[in-house]
Image (cartoon, rainbow, N blue to C red; front, side, top):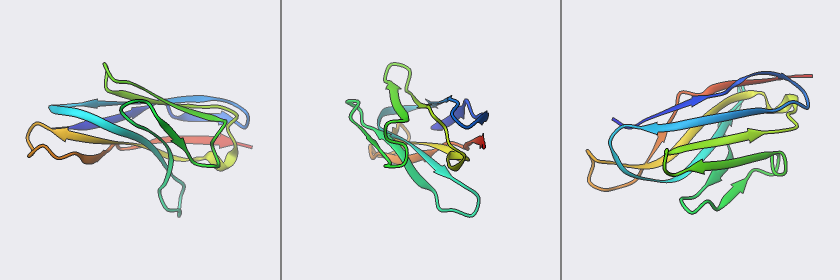
Length: 122
C-alpha cells in the first residue's frame, strides 16, 4: 500500500534550476532515510543524495555544492533543489525511501517512485 510519487522534472538550459519533490503515501509506521537516484540511458542507477530522519545529508561528488536535499517529516516528503544544472545531469530521477508498512512485520524496506525526467540542454 506504500507509494512514492515524484514530480518537478522538466527541460532546462545548462545553468538553470529545477526542484524535484517526492511524497510518500499509504499506510506505514514511519519513514527513515530518503534518497534521490539518477539513471541516464544505458547507465547504472546512481545515488545522488540521501537524507536521514534527523536531516543528516550526503551527496555524490558530482552534485555536491549544486544540489540540496531536504525533507518535511510532517508531510513525509523529500525534495531535491537542483542548481547550476549541467547536460551530464540529464537522467531519470527516482525517489527512494526506507519505509515500515503497517501491513508488514515492523521491518523497514526500500520503496521506489516511478521516476521523473530531467533534461538539461547545452
